[in-house]
Amino acid sequence: AFAQGNGTVTSNFKVLTSVDASCVLDVENINIGDFTSSTTGVTTANGNISVTCSGKFPYTVSFNSASGSNTEKKMGKEGSPDKLAYSLKATHAGATFETGTTAGNIIDVTLAQNTGAKMTFPLDVELSNNQYVSPGAYKDTITATLTY
Image 1 (cartoon, one colour):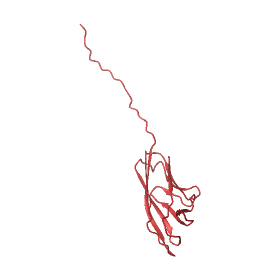
Image 2 (cartoon, one colour; image 1 turned 90 degrees about the vertical axis):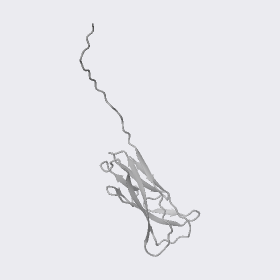
Image 3 (cartoon, rainbow, N blue to C red; image 1 turned 90 degrees about the horizontal axis):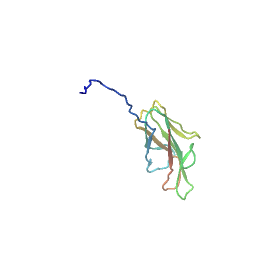
């Protein structure tokens, strides 16, 4: 007869995965609405840009204008030489926004600031009211580039 034992056998195994760096960039148009020229004041409009990146690595978001200049952005009107100069500004706790640099306008998020949660950056467009241009629709296209 064969005797049944009371022994125990163990073996280890690993559970493995790899986490790729990934980001999602969500932008929205900023509509200033009606603009009226006057000798003083500033017209301001607000928008947002949102970034969600897997956590624990730095990233930047840069903005380039179709008008070809990072130091002075301009909205154009189709079929007209008239231009409306404007500035693009962003603020967010723990991020910086550099304006007026030839290197571009940059939101800079450090490794420690990127927790993996969605970060929303308010964007402001400001137009000086002392600009006198022909009536019509003016626009500029901004390219937001997320680098990680």
